[in-house]
Image 1: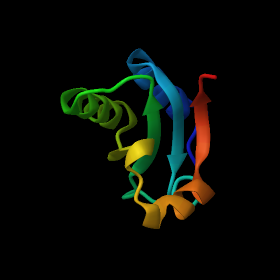
Image 2: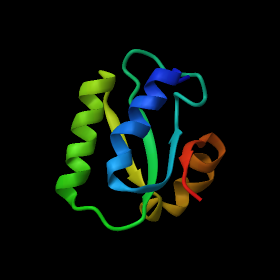
Image 3: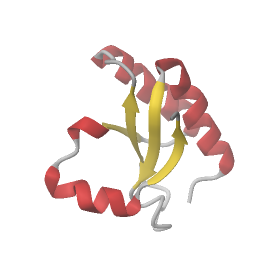
Image 4: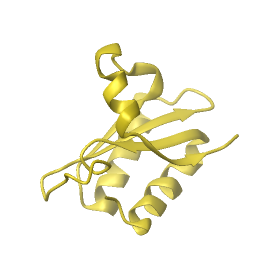
Length: 96
């Protein structure tokens, strides 16, 4: 499970990109993570971001969290994985 400090790092790193929703899914949310586990983050931003901005976010999160990070747009979820992701997903930020 992610610590509150890790959650705060994720949210504060992504806030400048105007997120509507940020969630975490996968082994960290199933409490089955180990030292090699990456952190899977699902996001939706108000507007588009470039591939370079996405890369910047990933690199900054990797540096701050000392973990590999997968950043997945809500729009790009495979229909084959959507059910599993939704079962694991814990929303850590939502701007309504």
